[in-house]
Length: 332
Ligand SMILES: Cc1ncc(COP(=O)(O)O)c(C=O)c1O
Image (cartoon, rainbow, N blue to C red):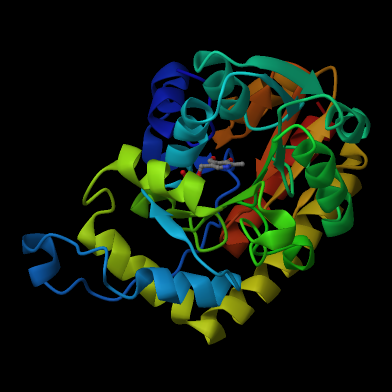
């Protein structure tokens, strides 16, 4: 099992602080999620049907030609490496640890690559995996740079996999969801999630956009009824609520900027990231993480390179609590 943010119960046990007293900033999940309407009781009783309008709704939201609904984009992160012939896969480093783990478990040779080295790696690799924006660093590739890499890969029947789990609040402009799997971008696979921007990580819903020769075996590997009926209901509501989406985008951008400024004003220097989180690579990351944990604030710690990631507080009281702890850290 790889380390992930959001493991509040483990932190509670380790530090002897009850779960309800923690401020969990360890994930990049929006702390104020979509207010899912009451679930109609028959949804618990009836099997979900793939023929409902969830895919059509997702196509409209993402501007995509075709999507496959997934029980979280994590499902595709794990299954795709098993569907593609073993080869060399370049993976952005640091990035979401599940990419490298899944590709090596499926027998591929994983080449970790820094951002600058990735376009060059696309010339020789059989697949390139990129988070855009990347978790945890927030680095982004332009649509043009991604299409260049896809063209390079195409020469070897290679694949470009772009995980856009964090794209909703930030760089929709560089999303490839509209062209993945189509003529110019037939070897591009895009993954999306409703976990982060919509704050619905618990619903376990994501989507893949790709050509049919990928989507069909992916659907077969996932099997029937993979998405719970209430989760389909929540996703359909969230993806159609355009007013809520624009309010959420504005709020996340405002709060992301506030977090960036707060960290800088607290002497932590310049952080990288997205609207949903800030990332700080620093030698004393473990010490900082433990200091905050003792105050009941859970951050995400990364060992290599040493770094911490701060997610967004939800309420003014939580912002004040974070600011006070940042002050204590500064004056320790
Ligand atoms: C970059 C990235 N992609 C994908 C996922 C998986 O998201 P989900 O399975 O909830 O769609 C995560 C979860 O943390 C993530 O950080």
